[in-house]
Image 1: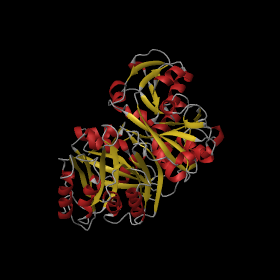
Image 2: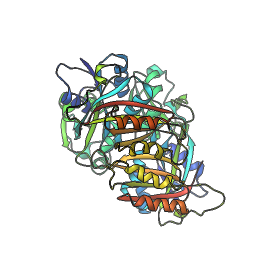
Image 3: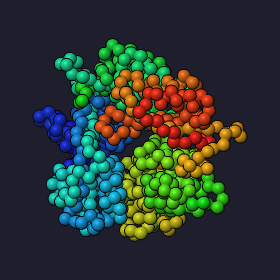
Image 4: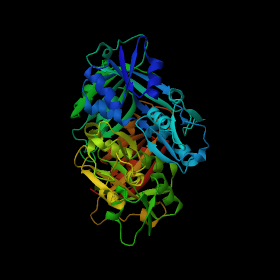
Amino acid sequence: MRVGYFGPRGTFTEEALRASAPDGVDAVALPSIYATVLAVQDGAVRRGVVPIENALEGSVDATLDALAVETEDVVIVDEVVRPISHCLIALEELELDEIRIVASHPQANAQCARFLRERLPRAVVLAASSTSEAVRMVAEDGEAGRAAIGNRLAAELYGCRVLREGIEDLAGNVTRFVWLARHDDEAAVVPAGGGRRFKTSVVFWGGGDATPGWLVRCLSELASRGVNLTRIESRPRRMGLGHYMFFVDLEGRADDPAVAEALAGLGTHCEGLRTLGTYPAAR
Amino acid sequence: MRVGYFGPRGTFTEEALRASAPDGVDAVALPSIYATVLAVQDGAVRRGVVPIENALEGSVDATLDALAVETEDVVIVDEVVRPISHCLIALEELELDEIRIVASHPQANAQCARFLRERLPRAVVLAASSTSEAVRMVAEDGEAGRAAIGNRLAAELYGCRVLREGIEDLAGNVTRFVWLARHDDEAAVVPAGGGRRFKTSVVFWGGGDATPGWLVRCLSELASRGVNLTRIESRPRRMGLGHYMFFVDLEGRADDPAVAEALAGLGTHCEGLRTLGTYPAAR
C-alpha cells in the first residue's frame, strides 16, 4: 500500500509513519502538507500522514485548512502521538557563537524560540519548508556558520553532526499526527468495539456567528448530551475579520447515539458542518 | 514619545503605525514581536505596535503568547485595522520562471500560498523574520533568481523592483494591529463616552477544562448577560495536549456593568483570567 507523507525524507512525520505503519507500506515523501492531502484525494496514494497539532505551538494550520477548504473527500482514520525533541544540526562541529544562520520549519523554530533567543542571539532565523529540508540545505550548502533544527534521523540521512540535543523550550513536547484516507475507502469505516475509545473530528461555521451566544448554543448541543470536547480551534473563514470556522474534537464515535444527536443539533445552528472522521483515540 | 514596532523598517506594522500615530511620535524598529512587547514592559518605549490577527491566516501566535505568558504588565490600548496587499519583489526585473528562491514572513507566505503553488511551483519558499527583512536580504544578497514577498514601502526603502502586485490569494485581506502600553500608563485608562464602541480582550484557562461542558459554562457567563464575543482563539498551555488558553474579544468595556459581571462569573470557572485591555473598536 502506498502511503504519502509530509516529506522530504527524515521529517518527524516520516518517524511517526514508521512507528505506526502496518507491514508492507510503501512510504512516499511528498513536498508539502497540501500535496499530501491532495494525493490522498486523487488516489495517488491510499493513505496520507500529516501533523495536525503540537503541544507547544498548537494546530498545524496548513492541515486544518487543507482538510476543511481544499477537499471534501479526505477523512481522518487514525491518530498517532509522538514525542518531539529537536537537535541543533550542522555539517561540521561548530561553536554556538560561530553560527550566523539557523533554519528550520517555522513550528520547530517556534518550539525552540527561547533557545534561539538566549543561545544564538546573533543568528538570523530562516524558515524552511520542513525540518529535514532545513538539514538537507545545510548539508548541500556546505557553507560554514549555518545550522538547522531537526531530528537525528535527518542528521544521519544527510551526513550532518548533532551539535545540541533537546533544544526545545519545554520538555514533554509531543505532536499529534493523523492518518488520512478517502471517505469511500474501507479505512474510513472504523469498526466499533474491542474496548477502544474513539474520537470524532468536525468542523462547523456560519449562520448567525456574529450574534451573542451563537457559539454557546452550538457547544451546548454537545454539553447537554454529555459529549466532551477534547479540543477546539478557530480558523478564519477568509471572508474578513470576525468570521471563523471551528474545529472540534469530540470523545466518541459519530454513530454513537449521543454524538449523532449532538451533531444533528449542532447542524441546526450552522451554515456548514462536516465530519472529518471517527478514529481510535491514541490516548 | 518613543513607540516601538515590529520591524525592521518597511514592515506592514510600520505602515500601520504611521497611519494611526499621533503627532510627535519617535518610531523605533525592534527586531521581533517578543522584543516589542518586552520593550513596552521595561519602559524602553512608551507604546508598542504589533500585528495580532490577519483575516486570512488568523492569530499572530507570537503576539498572543507574549501577552499571555511573557508579561503581566502590558495591555492593549488601541487597535488599527489595515488593508494588506502583497507584492512580489526582486532586485532586478525577472521572469517568474527565473525565480528559484522566494522568502518572506511565514504569514505572508501563507497568505500567498496559492500564488506560490501555481505561479512559482519550482521556487523554494523560505521564511524570514519579517516581510521587510526578506526584502532587505534580497537587496543585500544581490544574487539573481531571488525574490521576496513584501510591501511597496519596503521595495522603495531597499531599492528593489515590484514584479507583481496583489499576489495574496483572496482580496479584502486585512490585518488587525494593536497599540500596547504598560498597565500603569495613563493610556491604559481609556475614557468612556463620545459615542464610541469599545472592545475588551481577555485570556482565561484551566480549572476543569477537561470535563464535559467546561467551555460552555465559561462562555455562558457572557451569553447569558448579552455580552457578544467577536473572536475566540485557543492556544496550547504548553503542558501537554488537551490543555488550552482561550483568548476572547468582547464587545464593551471591562467596567460596563454587564461585562464586569460576566467576567466575575467567568473567573469562578477558571484557574486564571486576565484582562488584556479595554480599547476603542476600530470597526
